[in-house]
Image 1 (cartoon, one colour):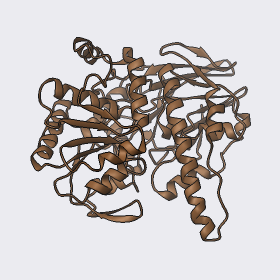
Image 2 (cartoon, rainbow, N blue to C red; image 1 turned 30 degrees about the horizontal axis):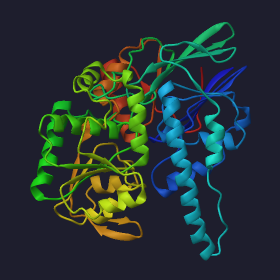
Image 3 (spheres, helix red, strand yellow; image 1 turned 30 degrees about the vertical axis):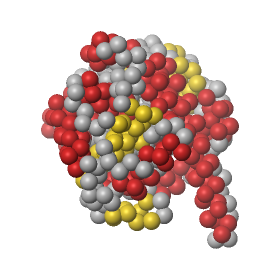
Image 4 (cartoon, helix red, strand yellow; image 1 turned 60 degrees about the horizontal axis):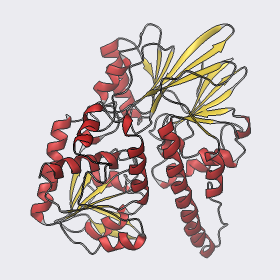
Length: 467
């Protein structure tokens, strides 16, 4: 027996989770959180489709919560096996899961106040800080390009995916009855035009390929065009006198934005004289990026060294960091001339909501979206042209100018996905498209058939395939 079961990120982008079962092993690829509207996030409370106590190990591609966010719940319910991840992911999940537990406990406390007033039963948090500590004790770092024997019949190897720091493509060799099947999971493949990280590793052999399809329906703008569009948005905001809000995920996108703002500053092309990084988690993540700068691509690493920038914060001297709520609230007294970077990237949590509340109704303000906006999120509503949105208990008019810069995406675009897939021998590989909204995955499947000459399947949630 050797099977793979699809338990998440099928027909949608979030909730990554796949179960590999063999005669001797039960291994999870990922254990991610479902993110989006309230109905989608309620999925996180459903019982696992397996007994956590019976899982031997977890292999984790990277630290984003849609890949790692339910790991503490897994530990809460009895999992005690190793969690394999690259060294950078090992460091980042400590930061991200502690923050997730803090928000979960806080949100649960707020929800239970509402429930008590309505005479409804209280709910428990998905997991607590203590559960995170249990989980973090199970981490086991494995470097890129090292073939590791996980069990009697499974070996794996991490390859650089170029998506965020430490992100990995997972190669897994699964033995059964004297033969070996090779499974390759793309994880989230990085954009080859990334400003900081290396290109995704090209893999050439696989029997089964699980490939993401987040941007399976389109390509991103060329990096030069994106940089120019970013400059123009900042200049337009300077002319209008308003603030610039950049909703950005704390890990990955924030560091690229800081790098580019620093490049503009070093060249005398940054019109704003104050940049606020209003996210304790992003500040800590930037320090972790500094610790693993050897993973940067050579050109950007050389540029930082030439400027004698000890880290990304030193690269941008006009940067101010806000750790405390009081420092964050003080920013809202500034009505113009500032760049404010805060999470969450989809505006469905975090400090960015307060900055939107104070700026979104101002016609001189600008909001720059630099990443994917999931369905049901406030960010998606703004990108789709909403004229009013619900924020922090009230409605806010949208008069600010909204910019969407797709070229900043940390995901590969359609052309890059096809290029990576072209490296495999299509005569022997079965390809399954995951991590994509259905229409985007279908467009990509059509391009694979037209360009590469074979069919790629879009699996169903709960489907099991034979390896």
